[in-house]
Image 1 (cartoon, rainbow, N blue to C red):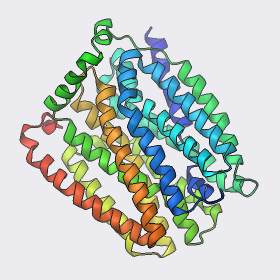
Image 2: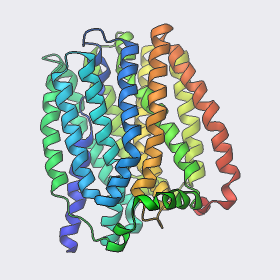
Image 3: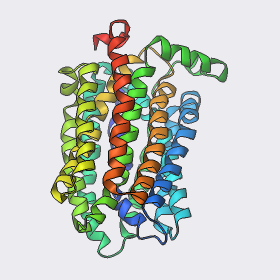
Length: 398
């Protein structure tokens, strides 16, 4: 059984590779090729996708905990496959909105669920304590392999903007087969039976008891803001008249650094605490968002996007590992982690629509400026609250 269960590691790694949207570098620019789509239209597309993620996040976590994590991962892959198909055939903003909704739904069924599934797999293998290190290395591979395709995507665009989506469709089919072939880790039947609607209040009480919600909100808000920034990466580069052929290279550089950091997630976690980790991120992202708001020099803008992209994803498994440690005693892991993802989605929806509106009304720099101010106004008080609660947090020993 152990050998069979161990196969989940390489299968889930394949799933992580398939999860990466190889067309991400040019997606914003692709939106602008569709008739009647402008910055405000992009904001609406991102808003719809983020709201869909918000709506499905908690139910997906509940369904995952109740019916099984593997089943939820298969549903995730079907939704993502549908999303890519819709992007491929899109000829108006409605198709783009539906594609964004399908993608966010797929991500909702994967977020939290994938982490919980692998946590149970490693627990079954007796390697639960190696979660951060193993997941970091898997995620590193998941980021590194698609970089080759991401760098080539702009060259595909020189032939047709549709070609990257056709290639992604093949990758998504492979991801679906990988999800179907996963082996369900052994879970006590009692744990499955106890997850019901009548116990949803128990989920909330457990999250409160574990002091999880403040950390989930902080992480979710930060991720949502960064999603809004990333959504306008390609359009801003297009506005600055940077040739589209460079988009994949710049994006690939950021992902390469992310892959390197992910490979050392275990070591990064070993030299930080959850508090120093959040302090570093708060300062780093605030600085670079404000750089985007105040400097329009091409190489500075490109550098800022590369740094944000690299750290946003490169530190993701360290963040996830800290959250997993907080809720380690809980049997509602996917549901609790969905709270962080749901926060991300609602913040991403507001941030994306707000940036799009500000860009359409004023300029790209004003859009990033307003976002940077909101970022600090919201997160600084929450950060202070987390620090003040440090003495009573179970996470205080991290």
